[in-house]
Length: 253
Length: 128
Length: 128
Ligand code: SF4
Ligand code: FES
Image 1: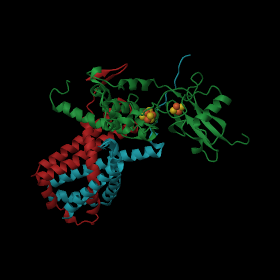
Image 2: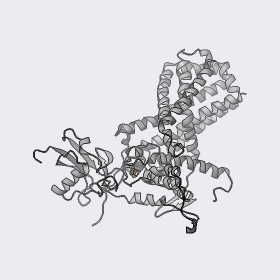
Image 3: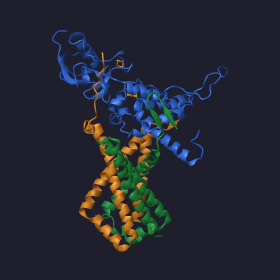
Image 4: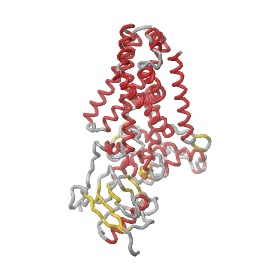
C-alpha cells in the first residue's frame, strides 16, 4: 500500500456531552477502489478516532442499520462505493446522520418514534377467526403472493423517512416504511386485520399527510415502493369512508 | 449517562435543496394555474348568464396581452400537471394480469391515447 | 372508530371529503385543461381559431343544454377543488406548520373553492 491517494471524509459530528449542534470534522482517508463509505468510517474509527460513532452490522445491504446521508442523499453506507463519489480517488465526501430524526451521537439517530409508529400499524398477520390445525395450511396462490411481495422486502433502514419532507414537517406522520408494511399485511390473503389497521393508517397521521412526493420510493434500496402503497391506501380508505357514510350501519362494524 | 439528542428542524427552504424536490414543488405549483384558470372560466360563465354584452366584455378581457401571457403560462403548467399525473398512475393503480404486474409503459401510454382523444373531441366540437 | 396504541390515540379522519374531489379533479384537469386553455386563452384571443367559435349564441346554446351544464360543472368544479386542496398542501410545504396557521390556510383555500362552486352553480342554474 505504498503511495496511496487519499480523499477527505467530512463527517458531521455531534457529541451530546459537549455539543449543542453538530459540527463538521474532516479526516484524510486512504482511497481503495473497492471500498464503500462504511469502510472509510471504520478505517477512521480504527486508526484515527475511536470515538466516531455509527451503526452497522451486515456490510451487505441486508440489516438496514448503516443508513446515513452521504453528500446529502440518504443511502446505505455499506452500498455506497467511494469510486462513485470521487474522481481518481480524490475529492471530498460528506457524511451526516439521517435527516428528520433526532441525533443521539455522531451518525447514530434516535429511532424510538419509528418503532412506535411501526407497532401502531400492527405489522403481523391478524386473524379474527383462527383456523383449526386439522383444516390444514393456508393456501396462497403465486399471484396472491406477487401482489404484495415487493412490500415485504423492507429492512427498516429509514432512508425513506430521511427523504420524505412530510416526515420532517409533520412529526406524527406514520411515514413510508410503516405504511407500506401495513399495506403488505392488508394485501396478504391470510390476513383479516385490515379494518383494525385502518383506524391508524386512515387517521390524520396516516396516509393523508402524504403529498406523493415519492422521494421514498426513489431512495429505497429494496424497491419496496412505499409511495405506491400509500396512494393505494388513500384510494381504498376513501371508498371505505364513502361507503361508511352512504350505507347506514356499516360504520358500526 | 444522560441522553441529550440533537433535534433538527426542517428549514422552509427544504425544497430548494435538490432538483427532485424542485420538480415536486413545480408540480404542486400547477395548482395555482389550474385554480386561477377555472376561476376565470367560472366568472366567464357568470358573464354569459348576464347577456351578450357582458359575455363580449369577458372575451375582451381574454384578448388582453396580459391575459394571453397568463394563459400561455397556464398552458405550460397544466401540461406539466398532465405529464406528472400520468407518470404517477402506475404507482397509484397497479394492474395485475395473471401472475404479473402490467409494466408502467403501457399504463402511461394508454393515458396519453385517452388524452389525445379527449383533446381532439374538444377541438372538433369547437371548430364544428 | 379510534385506536389507542402505546402513546397515541388514532381516529379515522374525514379527509376523503376533500381527497375524492382532489383525485377526480386531478384526472379531469390532466385530460381536459391543456386543450381548454389553448382554445379559450390562446387560440381564440390570438385569432388562430375564428372568434365565432366562442360567440355568445354558440356558448349560450351549449350552456343552456342540460348535458352541457353537467359537462361544464364537472370540467370546472372538479379541477377547482383539485387546485384548492393541492394549493393548501403546498402552502403547508412552504411553511405553515402550526395548527393555527394551517386552519387559516385551509379556510382560505376551501373558501375559495366554495365561493366559485356557488358562482358556477348560480350561473348554470340561472338560464335554461
Ligand atoms: S421502505 Fe425501503 S427505504 Fe424505507 S425503511 Fe424499508 S427498505 Fe428502507
Ligand atoms: S451494514 Fe447492514 S445494511 Fe449496511
